[in-house]
Length: 429
Ligand code: ATP
Ligand code: MG
Image (cartoon, rainbow, N blue to C red; front, side, top):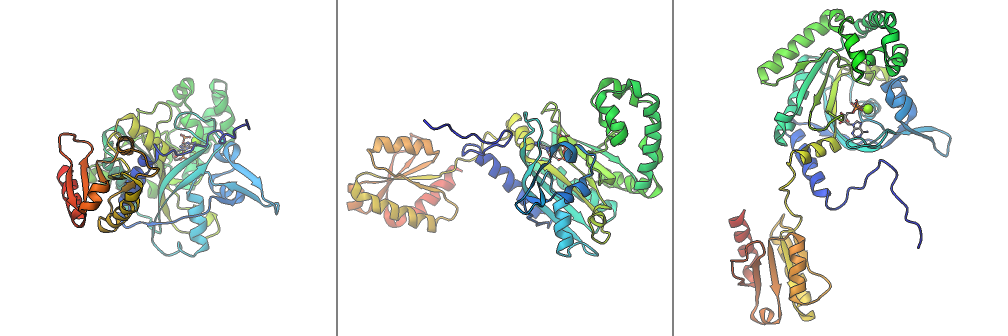
């Protein structure tokens, strides 16, 4: 036998038994953003490598270790996108959508990072994200956070996630703080874990979110970012907190929250959960006022977030929120005997037109009624429509409730099937 080819490690198929859950969350997210008047943007999966180097930052985990980068046949260096924000800015700049305008955008799609695959961490994963351009006030940050809060409500998990909030300040404030932090850490370098020693020289702020307990203990006495905040950022943060308070959105200030990407300033936030072990961040974002200009556009302020769809799915699954998704079929059409097949297919087709949104599966492949009922049951359908020779001769069709066997089969005149089906479906909902 020929050897089977396997999927690339860390890149998953979405199999038919998983797609209802994906469709459920995708639909939920589409409805969510529609409720705020945001427009969808779709960008290519592949971009110039420079786009990510210039935006995410050369000394970040993503760019140093995680990107899928290759030369195409022309010798141009291309990269499978590891995140969505850089592409949004690139597309917005290219189409002239950003400067001096307001844009409320959202996207959904696959992202690629070469990480060690584990539960909640894959090499192809999916993000849903929102990007808001051209609004510099804290009200914009508040709306983006309000949208994420509604997302948890809509999925019924608001009590399982916590909002962490911090301000990274202006570039200048961060640079000043960086100097102070490096001076402090250098004085205690021997006490740092290996990762943090490396980061001390490449990306010192990332030392703040080291998971190492000894490093964490050391950081208690480190200088605080909040002590270096510029007035503008300080006011922005105060206003954002006021708005969140008024909106009834709870948060924790986490002074160590710095995010792994270089482009953030002022507000950064993460929604975290205890329900997923180490992969606790479900959704993360912040303000990135400098990125549009950094990527060659005219200065435009921006704020946004990205959410990992696999983590959301895992969370919903863990919390038992995906147990009652509707089966993909409502009605199963059977025909007993070859002669009735065309009539059954015709009936099914007519009902698909008359009953918008009702999902009708046609039995195919013949066989006796017992076999057909088995298939009907497996399909998840609630009703069967049975057409045999007698029914055909009488101009009727048998209607059977498959989930309540106490109800007898009804013989419904062909012309009334749609009306009757609509009525019984309504009753049992
Ligand atoms: P982490 O700290 O878990 O590595 P990150 O800081 O790299 O996350 P971001 O780049 O901010 O994550 O991406 C936003 C969200 O995308 C994360 O909060 C997470 O839910 C999801 N995510 C990131 N990397 C992966 C991955 N490899 N597999 C699945 N989901 C991911
Ligand atoms: Mg990561």
